[in-house]
Amino acid sequence: GAGVSQSPSNKVTEKGKDVELRCDPISGHTALYWYRQRLGQGLEFLIYFQGNSAPDKSGLPSDRFSAERTGESVSTLTIQRTQQEDSAVYLCASSLKGIPDQPQHFGDGTRLSIL
Amino acid sequence: AQKVTQAQTEISVVEKEDVTLDCVYETRDTTYYLFWYKQPPSGELVFLIRRNSFDEQNEISGRYSWNFQKSTSSFNFTITASQVVDSAVYFCALSDPLNYGGSQGNLIFGKGTKLSVKP
Image (tube, rainbow over all chains, first blue to last red):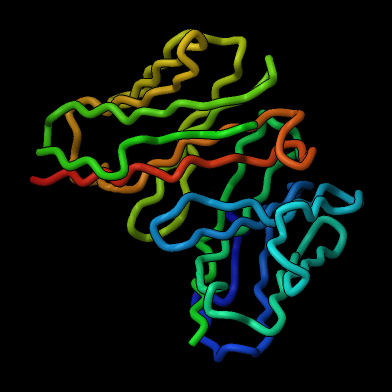
């Protein structure tokens, strides 16, 4: 597709359930990022994938959070045993190469609400 | 530590006014990159500009202009003759090769400035 695609756009779930969020990056982009944006806040880095290298998971807030990426395509972010503080918009971005001067292109995000 | 500060949480102007959004950053590195993104009410972040630390020339793109000053670690954004469609949250972000967990290309965002342009 032309841009970064994320699904679902909205997700409402009960506390304690697991959720899986999906990101389709721009074709040909080797770098993929996940960010979290809490209400009224800036973006908080979660995890970064670059090609076939080991991902940088330094931003994941707890071991309930994990992410996978198949080659240089789709990525899924999984949150296990969700808590109310996980409520946020989860944004995915991709860039042509994972180098600092490349602009990141963002999807519309998944708005996650934990009841 | 690397940090981006956008001190203005919200700004409200009337259409056709000029408005400047402030951004101050902190980094240990001499090579780094600065970005501005726009997040309209629809939610998608839109890339506006990238500037590297070696290029201090100001840039103008239509009604938008950016003033980068290394001496004050600032990268301010000015909208001239604002329009209602400029209403959005604007984020300043920093990227440098040695930052934040060692992840190249990771962006450190400020908390954003919400701009409301009233007709």
